[in-house]
Length: 117
Image (cartoon, rainbow, N blue to C red; front, side, top):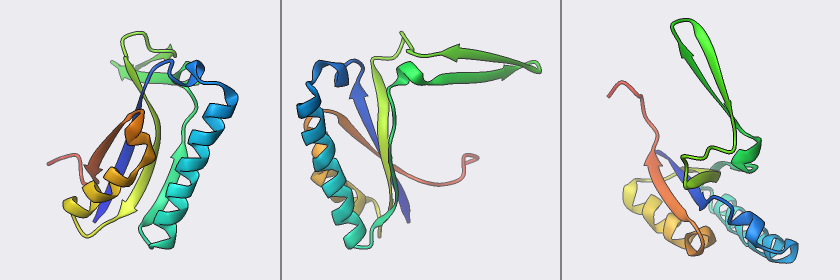
């Protein structure tokens, strides 16, 4: 089964760190991902830039509406994700509990699946 760990960071948290602090945390996440890969659990991983550089698109009545970030209504932003191959929910939760980002962000665990269910 495929599960996604979504890393939800408080908006502005990255800017509150020094570059050295940010590099240390990033390296911890890289090592976490390398360990998952070594265990044969990691399908994909990406860090995402701040939502200040993001854009949201909606299509309504055939017209596109674009909203440039940052998104003032959001208190958190998705800072990255890990796509995992797990035996089930319990394994995915155990892997999420090992994630260093759980110390400064929220790790959301979601199973992949069709959106019509």
